[in-house]
Length: 615
Image 1 (cartoon, one colour):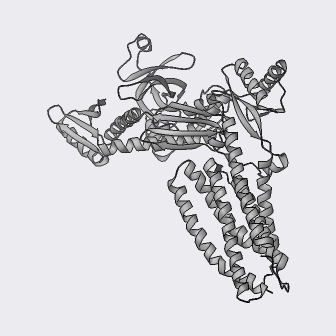
Image 2 (cartoon, rainbow, N blue to C red; image 1 turned 135 degrees about the horizontal axis):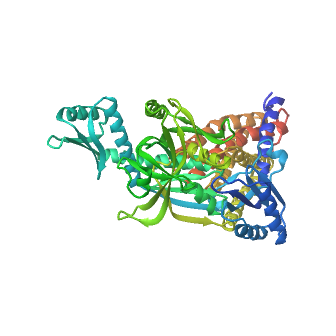
Image 3 (cartoon, helix red, strand yellow; image 1 turned 90 degrees about the horizontal axis):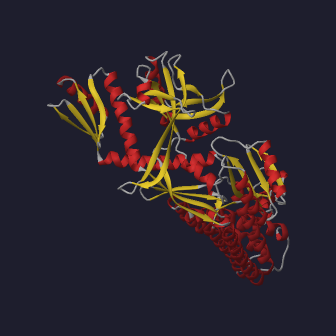
């Protein structure tokens, strides 16, 4: 029978639309203004912190909707932004520097809906407000770090191949290796030339030295790697710490743009982004004179560092392993219930650790925590000057040859061990970074953008709605139902996709898909009219209208979809936001305009003997 869907197909279409409507529902509940209190540098909020917050709010007669302690953070919801801002100021003044007090907007989704994965669409910085940072990567430090690594690698390679040398050290932009005789010089040059093809090697037979310099290609590669790796690490770090849907992308040769939608307080964000923690493993210099080193006479092959209590220890300059090789780090407890961090290394790191410890069993090894902090000054080249701070976490005796997995102790409290593991797991930055510009977009501006964008969508929808009813009568109402279903599906899918973020250009994409969706129905309805004018029966006209217009609709939408995918692939920021909603809108409009509208048409007019059609 013409134009009659089986029951299962009708139910399937209804189910898809209902599912989209279900997951679009959280957007109707809005968000509550809230204040989030979290600990800094390993400190966690506790039940005592919760009671303290309640006390401060009660003392100052500030009403709150709810207050909960979850995952070491206290979240307090308020009924209005006025109470939220007052509470933030009071808590910021009274909780001290151990805690970060941040403004946030928390979804008011009912528990039953949240339990099945329902959540409102994530809004971009231009709609929800938030903070934006422009960060600069210190490329000079990245190159210095690469040279330090090469010095260590040169020594290891020459030692493993039993090539004798006097010294390996940095001199300006070069690495200089001094040998004992001409034979060692030739063997060393042959070995290093074979293993380091991207270096320029020059020898001086008179002084028995080999000079290695990086080519411009190598320098460019180091800078590019430092930038790309820092972008990846920052993105991982922000995700690990629970900041929703950050935008992290490069800008120019040494800058990174970071946008954190929904975050109104920059203190916690700065701590996350400026943290450049890594660790190094060094042997303790048991032969050096510690007293002489404390008085300023540090041996040339050693350095003097202290632990958090100020206790000094003399360490070997040679680094056994750096944090670059860490692939995973988890906090836990040892057999004596002391906090520890379990570390896993990549294959290269495991090999270095194995080689470094096999001949040093029974000797003490120190774990050094390193952090770079910006000084606020700039060098002659305009790069930000960083201060390198080093602190000994633990000193332990090497009991056996270590490999790809081992543990470190002495991190302090469990919270500090957890924080260290998180930073190491998220990655050690290849080069130090500093915030050179920060911008806060207030929630008021974001709310205004949401309001205007919503008005644009409703205005476009309303005009199309009126036109379709006037011009196509009953079939116009069908098209409007399909149009409404399309809008619901777009919102539902955007809410379900974890990485999808709605921006102001994204709202423009929704407005565009409204017009595109109705365009498909116009093609179908005009074809039905044409078939009826040619004398075909109403049922044949409806059938031919949908069948004949289908290929045209597919062609038009596929070309637009390809363009949207290209925009998504090559675009950034607002362009990507537009491409996402446009792509989703194209797919949902094809479904609702062709399958959805035909389901309604078949249910109302299908299989009936009709003499007149309201179209």
